Image 1 (spheres, rainbow, N blue to C red):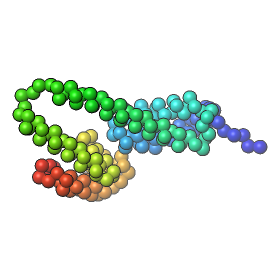
Image 2 (cartoon, rainbow, N blue to C red; image 1 turned 180 degrees about the horizontal axis):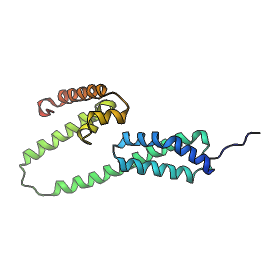
Image 3 (tube, rainbow, N blue to C red; image 1 turned 180 degrees about the vertical axis):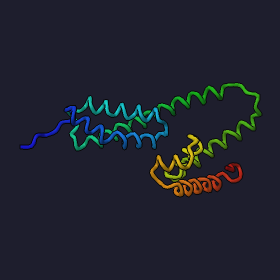
Image 4 (tube, rainbow, N blue to C red; image 1 turned 90 degrees about the vertical axis):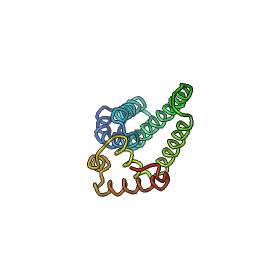
Length: 173
């Protein structure tokens, strides 16, 4: 009779940890692009696996970890939206010496830019944001995404072309 393994057994938990830590970290890093946040989400996922070890079967532990990490990320994004909404409110109340017409045009352009970036295909958006926001070089992006540098170049080129089409001459990169 074969003994059923339990996630609550330290050796089994350690085996799951060793098998899943890298792929779970990479998954979270690709989603949020922040090393510290990715590590926090991964750590919290393993803590929740340990706290719920009696309820999770070994075969479902990977799915449990990825689901928990993804939900933690989504909750953090939702919280950040609320924070930004309130910050935006206070910024709008702040009196500036800027021309109101300029402020309106700037706000419209930012909305247009955010919309255009959101409409990029996932792979192009990831490469674009990693390069333009995280200031990563194509080589670093290729290593992180496990793709060739040529693929990164192609995706970046397509993303820039798409943004130029959507924004016209307002956005030249």
